[in-house]
Amino acid sequence: MGSLEPHRRPGRSKVVRLAHLVGARPRSRADHWSFLFGEMAVYSLVVLLVSGAFLTFFYDPGMAQVIYQGGHTPLRGVLVSRAFASTLEVSLEVRGGLLMRQVHHWATLILIAAVCLHLLRLFFTGAFRRPHGLNWLIWVGLFVLGIVAGVTGGILPDDLLSGGSLALIQGVTQAIPFAGTYLTGLLFGGAVPGEQVIPLFYWLHVLLVPVIMIGLLIVRRGLLRRHGRTHYPGAAQLPPLSSPALFLATCGVLTLLGTVAQINPIWLYGPSRPGTTGAGAVPDWYMGFLDGAIRIMPSWEPIVAGHPLTLSVLIPALVVPGGFFTVLAAYPLIERRLTGDSGVRRPLDRPREAAVRTALGAAGMTFYGLLWAAAANDQFAYHFSSSLFAVTWFFRIAVVAGPAVVFEVTRRICLTLQAQGREQRAHGVETGIIRRSARGEYTEVHQAATALPAHGGIHADQH
Ligand code: HEM
Image (cartoon, rainbow, N blue to C red; front, side, top):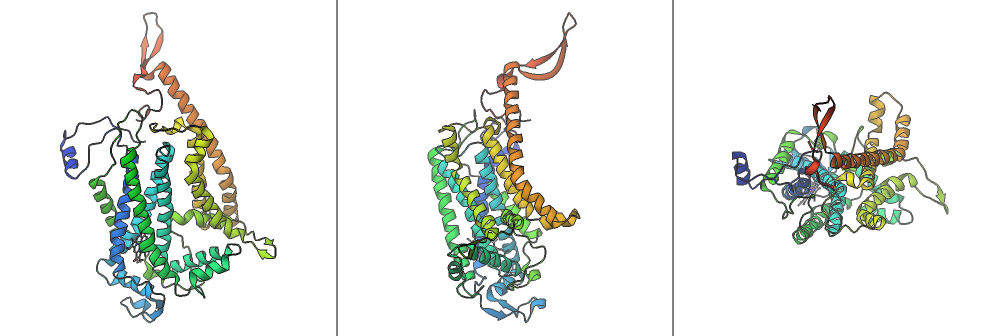
């Protein structure tokens, strides 16, 4: 864990003066690195809006089939949708087009990762307590909307992988009891894939979802101004953070990634073909946990009142994510009910001080992580030369047992660290200096623990 440095006076060194010049404030104890994830998410969204706006000039969301006549020779004469042909044109014929596409895609991956890390920071430090409950909900909302934007965006190029995602969406919609067939018709309009789903997703993607995300961020800004930022014990409360330097750094890293790291090369995959998907295809990282859940789910399909109930799809694709996000959103309420602690305007917790919450968080991460890893069950089986069934069964058991084990281990670690802190406060910190008394006794010198806070200080054991 990084340490919180003591407050430095501004302008002392050239580096600090330079940092000032590009807008960075001197770091104070309240400027913990973990506070930056939220800002990084906001800046990634700005990059998405700018690069997305560029792409709309060239992208055509039409699903009508045309014969590809563009510059990519291997696909000349092939029947493709206008969406695919235009994305190919952006990638290979528009100047800067490929860079913008790649920056757009990388920014998506970083945006959702930054939102997740920010949520973890809020969770483990208890930063969701009153009056910050609405802020927590906003970030959970941004997490869900980021995924929706990523999925709808991934469909737009109408390449082979987009086709795979559409087939999955069709399967999940059809599995919904009673309304499934009707909803599929509503989404695809007649035959699948039809000609309406990509234009529909296009407007969702470029207008509805970004507008809601921007709206949520505006509300968040207002909340920050009203309630101030959360802060660690003993640290000053700072005004809302905004750093042009971090913005430039985020843009720089995303541009670098877009320049050197190829992502979604649709000209290698080819156009979408119903019922076809590439071997070894994996989704973007944020969809991995759903893919894993689907892979390890037993093929249960009981007949209820003469109708098949496709639990093998419903549970992993709707119940698991629905339950996960509902519990995530409702967690502040659940904790308040269970502990009776309203926690109004308390400084942030050290994770160890809230042992049960930290253990729950670690268990939740384990659950998510195992589902995520299960999305690579075929890769594990291949690289460890074991049977796919054995690997799948491993994940089925691990996903249930793993979180329980991690919960207990984490809780005990937290309690041990708490006891260690109490011990240090009572008897001081071991210095490693051994003194010999006049009578020949050896004793270790303990430094008085005045620097150690009684409750939840953050500098006690951050080296
Ligand atoms: C809100 C956050 C957004 C996310 C997470 C997101 C994500 C994505 C992703 C993952 C793709 C597929 C990229 C690829 O082909 O490799 C995509 C495509 C696209 N996005 Fe976005 N996007 C967002 C916002 C926007 C906005 C605001 C616009 C327009 C103003 C936009 C316009 C487009 C267009 C036109 C495409 C299709 C072209 C292409 O695939 O290269 N996006 N988006």
